[in-house]
Image 1: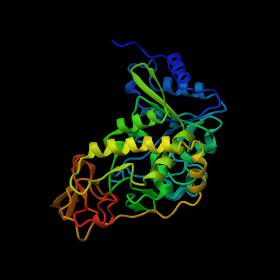
Image 2: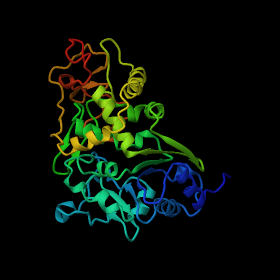
Image 3: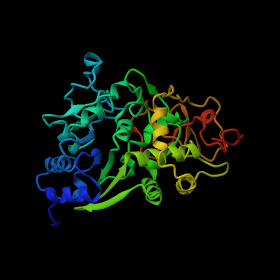
Length: 362
């Protein structure tokens, strides 16, 4: 049997990641990845609170289920809002560590019907209380921007870069062309339909890019590989790479082929080069200023005239022309379609500049 992970080992591991008292922490975590933790999730939460200190903050996602689910959105929102913080005690769907934080007596919850965060510690209120003003889950005054203001730290405990929700914040403020269906009532922008994301398909390549850029610190806690990124470093990196290429985080075909891994390798290599060419460590301030002027989100539409010669085109199915380079739109249920199912073709809004004006583009 593997060694048991203790409270003190977790605190020591967090110190290895540079966490000190008064730290403001945004946590993405998986309990099972640690191996056997003595005391389970409450031990992890207690260790996080100790590492951050009473004057710091620990916030964790308490998101609801997907837009394609009956559990989508907190039921109390319409009757409760507007409020600075959310009074709902409904469960989230993002893991036992988040649920353990939510159940703490002093826990606070941000006001967002689909992507609320829960937090504890003296600094949690500031991180969470602006979320109700954000028109999208990761938009202006969301915890992502307030974490940068507080020079906080994003911590990944046993999870990969596919869990790094912060990436959506730069997409919202850049108003990248692949943001898709908007549910204005619930302030939810679907991430993503017109495009497939490197973050989800090849998270290890994005992790390597952050390592090469020098913005990630790593350690081992039990069986879990853990990472920490200063929110300001991550924000600066994301701002620089999307300024270099607004489409850098999604996969698209070239004129002749659709090779997602090759595209991801090329794009992540370019991210590192863009950062080395312009290592703007204070770009997070530009990002933060831009967030106050968040634009109206782009909204995709199925292509009325699909580019059938595009290498990503996959034909007509269930009433829609299909594109292998696109994710599923929100009206199609996850349980009905495997993860590699082609999405709806959006050729007239194709976000790959080499093909959007090409007669064979997709």
